[in-house]
Length: 555
Ligand SMILES: [Zn+2]
Image 1 (cartoon, protein in one colour):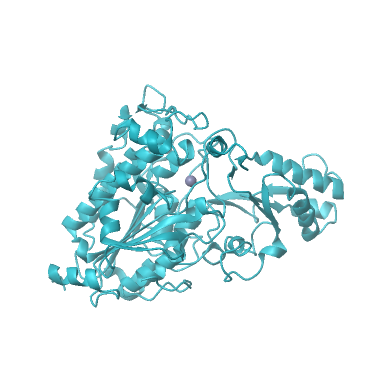
Image 2 (image 1 turned 90 degrees about the vertical axis):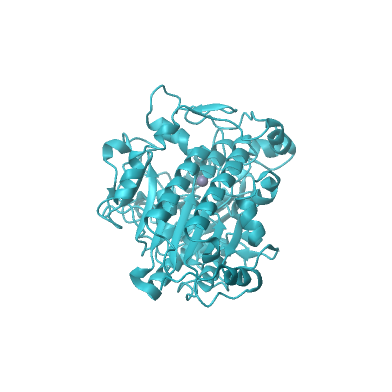
């Protein structure tokens, strides 16, 4: 079954066919670049090399008008949607973290105490502190929908291999799905997995970790790849006071990557995660995986999922209009080029189907918006101010609670009303939610406030609110009140920026297909959802779509 298709035949298919080839591709590669906004390919395109993004765009079909169609535009739900083709109200992964109403504790989207980490000791994970909580186990147990990988396993059983790798646990785990042979992610410079997948790291992963490739970046200088004038022309000045100074990175080029310390410590890995070196590190790991796991080497389709996370870190720290993000994208182009060259060498690109997309975009630094347009509605929201307005209104309506009691627990942009407080005042949750809504709506940065009653409803009717909100809402366990800031109002105090809102800058991402069965050099402008990726990829691979996917294939 290992006969290789004549190359010339593949080329003919790739150039004229729109249907999947009769023999399925050997390898599907799904590349998700965290926070890779939909405008980046066009904006930075003139500065790309030949072998990376340009090779994919010119050799494939790009849907330049692709959107996430849910409201909580974060990493976990974004990645969960890419290969399930559905939304959090169905797949269950509403946000990166949420409050569990059974315990009133915050849980991580891929947390699973029953699946301890494999390949790293607690000592190597560093001291437990605020911002570095104890890492319990990890698995896709909160993911309740089928992925394209599940369909692959349903058709071929264990002959089809599924590997996922990312700088972040949630990106690897949620792309890989419940049936992945392994998901690997980076913890302080080591690629690790969890007991959900395997009891020990394979020898090749141990060998990769022993090379200490991330550690080797200690003291390395990150400077711009190209002339500073090119960056200034596109992005403005390098120094922007609203950029964060994270882990000794400072606000300007060039910078030495040390974590602000003389010796290698946890701060170094935080700094490293913000640099393109982290994407290069993951690229090297993925190339090793392709060779060592013999991906795409036989006639049964394998699936490789890759989640590059460093542009997200840089975007949070420096904003999308920074020299740093531009340089991270230009260097990402080189990492993609190396990966494509490896796939061509090991599998043959004509035997691959490649999909490139992202989990979400990002908001500009509000200070940048105001500098360009001083009259604009933009700024930073302090969550304590929102909490104070809600508490004041509840106290006024129902009387203050005894000291030490609280009306609610905040969860992303919303509140769970606490049953003990409601019982103490004999108030029902719906009445209290209405009071909170009335108090928050007049806040100058508030766009919309919804109560539970308004979030239980149809989720199929177009892409307007509250449909977007309902797709990110699980009625059985979700919040009593949910709110949305106005565009360009960032829920991050001080400096830097973030994402999580249902606006274009957070929802617009690339949707790029390349390889066997994909028309070449086509730019499509119609609006499509990221939820179309799973059914489209399934079709290209000759599979049924994942059970919960509703969108029609776009190819
Ligand atoms: Zn992010």
